[in-house]
Image (cartoon, rainbow, N blue to C red; front, side, top):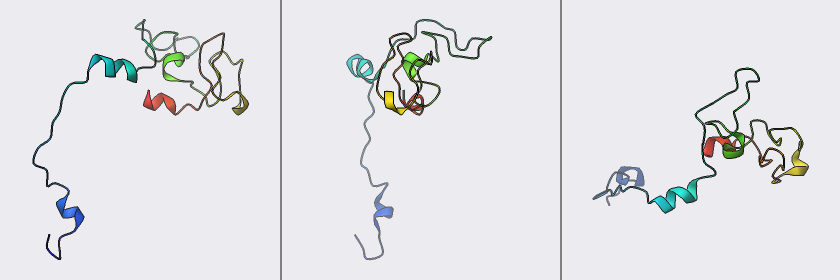
Length: 98
């Protein structure tokens, strides 16, 4: 390393990169549920269909700290899973990760 060379100049100094497919066991460990229906959003209510591509039980709630049916609302129920709709009460940003 010379005197003028910084760590930013060495960022691309890699000999090789290895890319491989994920194992089925790893994929199952990343999942939060199974999409069983091809429906996305109910055209009358504009709410995600249950077991569909945007299901709140699988991907998380649409609204912060509120389950899908509205039984549990607020941070005092944080982490609780609703017995009616099966949605975990948490912030809605988890939908982006799941």
